[in-house]
Length: 282
Length: 284
Image 1: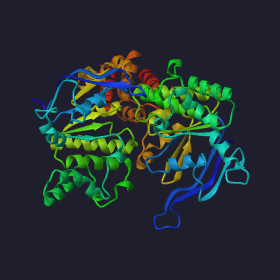
Image 2 (image 1 turned 60 degrees about the vertical axis):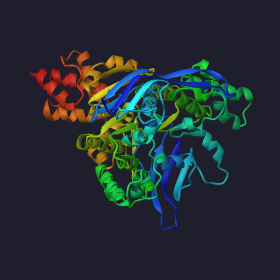
Image 3 (image 1 turned 90 degrees about the horizontal axis):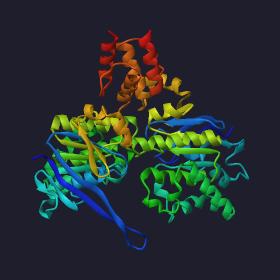
Image 4 (image 1 turned 120 degrees about the horizontal axis):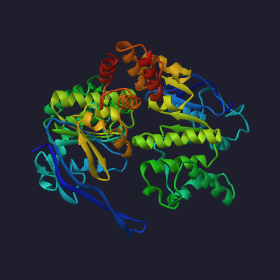
């Protein structure tokens, strides 16, 4: 079990009149190798939760465990945790700063105190993993396209060799092709390395297509924690909390109501196509 | 003459290296002709770096043409004496709501624009009220903007633009940072302004679903207009759009895939309603 979140609550501006319960009694287990989608409307507590996983925020109540060790116990190596639980923030390209792409990716592992050759090996491997071409390695990161910059930023985290990779809306602001490319790359990376991925997303289509488990946050609590199909079955409840099911799910409901009976548990385009073709034959 | 017109518009900027030496010239806009009619809803699509935002910035004189001309409400954007007219007539809403809100209270923020125009106080308050009502944020007028959700903030930004009584509003990826509800709120507000108040809307977006309400879609690539037409016409060209790194609405893609698998559906289905009708038709 990589991470356990045990009865965690967090209150912003505690002991003041402005106190806000950002997390309330959150219990989550994150086993190795899962691909998890974390969804919730703005202000639902997603980001606060993610910052807890990475040790950036200390819970007001409750405990976090990484491989069985309490984050805040004596002798816990927080620096190591931060390299093992890698967090890619929203718009990570704003954090690029080095003169060239390769140096930027080297920055993290260099701070781990590794040898120069090990640092460079890791940087090279990470840039390859995100699919950046060799010719871009010594360019200024600021001359790259939006999608490329974002990949460099992700490589910077990958070079730390994390066990858990958390991505906060990695596709925001990218064009449709750019979105697919980044997500395909992440899915491939997870298959190849077995890294646990937590994808924070506002796109129900992306979540339905890639993840094996969805955690839905609402008002600081976990509202659902289940397989995508199960979660999207409660689409009315999701709408109440500012979310939705993937668009194909709605299309299937319409077809079921107005044309012919179809299975409405469908969440991806491929499934929808096959289901309609099947239904036509019936 | 339309509300926004461009003729042979080109825009170039000089790339420099760290020492300030010229590395080359990028032609971000390359010969664009445009004619947007008053009251139209136009969506601009295009991949990252295709020139969409650069084009938008020409529409309210943030950038000036290197070649060719742009006219807003018949006024040349390069003529300095029209600058304030143009900025007032063509209002701009950007991607990140947090970069656009300056007031401590919602109604103060919305009043900022008209106040700078020298509008009498009484009228400013009238404008603030009607603008907030137009985007459905009137009940939040006394709130602090930083306590609002992303969609609400973005609607306050739009209200701030409306309060200046523009003829045209340019929205540059206004929903990129919002959750599904926030996206719906913003698009609904933009459509209402277009249909009820007759304000011209130019919407730049990466969400194909948002473009289906447009009267006209413009697809940009390498600084040029690559396609132009109604949503139905544009979204019939699935393969071409994919080559331009774009996509089509999910229902369009589903219909397209079904057609490829042998169902005799018509092209350019852009709403669920149309797909339902088509399936009924072929089922008979």
